Image (cartoon, rainbow, N blue to C red; front, side, top):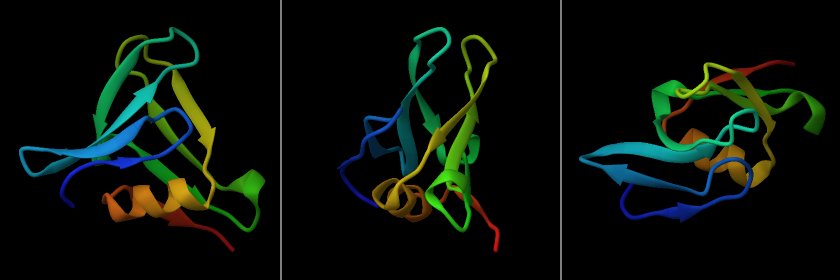
Length: 88
């Protein structure tokens, strides 16, 4: 994956840093903005929009963050190597 791709939600874009994919994200609790490697994010794909989300732990305050993931975010996260759990 070369260059950057835009996406909405807590993250601003996905990019590469020295060959690894990173995602810009923000914490709704402490308002910190940061970049996370794909391994720091988890994606859950459920049977509905309500049960499809991504999550991460804020590196600044330690809060568990869970955000809804639409089709475009799912596409970017899976393409960037984020670990995915699919439920029926």
